[in-house]
Structure formats: structure tokens, C-alpha cells
Image 1 (cartoon, rainbow, N blue to C red):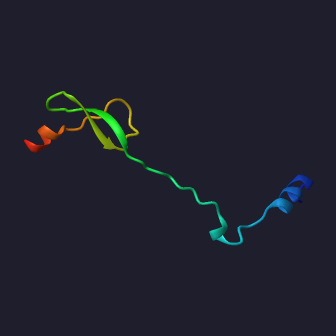
Image 2: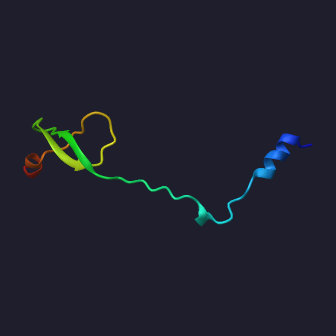
Image 3: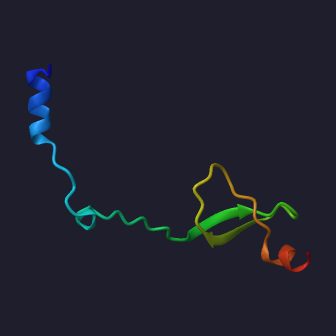
Amino acid sequence: MASAKRNAFRKHEEAIKNPDDEIEVVVECDKSKVECICPKCDKKHIMNFHWIGRGTPRKYCHNCRENM
């Protein structure tokens, strides 16, 4: 036997009629300037990329990348 609370809840349930009517969430992954440390020469430099990690990212600088 179903309780009165359960029946009241079911009255308010509505199925999604058209999945295209759902709210669309747009996530922007903009690149931004991030201060990095080169693991080879230990110099600080600025690069444009998306960084959500912790601490300072370790990316090779332009000069070290060319010499590899």
C-alpha cells in the first residue's frame, strides 16, 4: 500500500517531453597567461594555456624547447 506522501510526490513528477528543451550548459575553456617555471633552466616565464592544477606549472621555455 502506498502512503499519502508517496502519492503526493508522484503527482508532481513530470517526464521530460522533449530532450531538446533541456537547459544547455556552456563551459568556456579560455586560455590565460600563466607564470611557469622551466624544468631545464629554472627560469620563470609566461605562457598562454589553460591551467587548473595546483602550484606553478613546469613548462619548457622557448629557448630550451628549441635546443631539445
